[in-house]
Amino acid sequence: MSELPASYRKYLQGRDQTFIDTVRPVLQQSAAEEMFGVRVVIDPHLLQAHLDERLPFGEIVEDVD
Image (cartoon, rainbow, N blue to C red; front, side):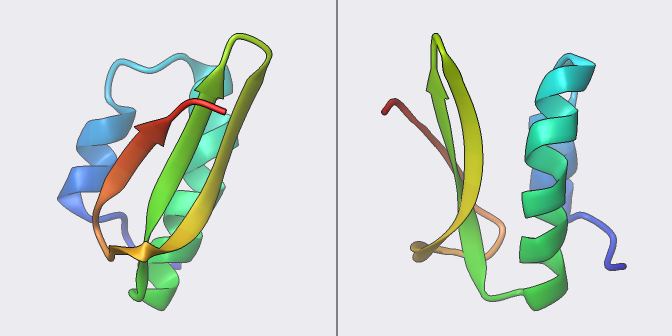
């Protein structure tokens, strides 16, 4: 499995384990494919991450649902 880019590692710093467990698999997928960035949707009742073809590889954007 590819190592996470520095921007992804920095993004995870200081996050709780539940957040990391939810987001890290998508960051790993992004790092393995090296094609798209990641959008993280944060809402009081939702935490979701997905690849976003509109974002360049290595970029993370937080959004609300």
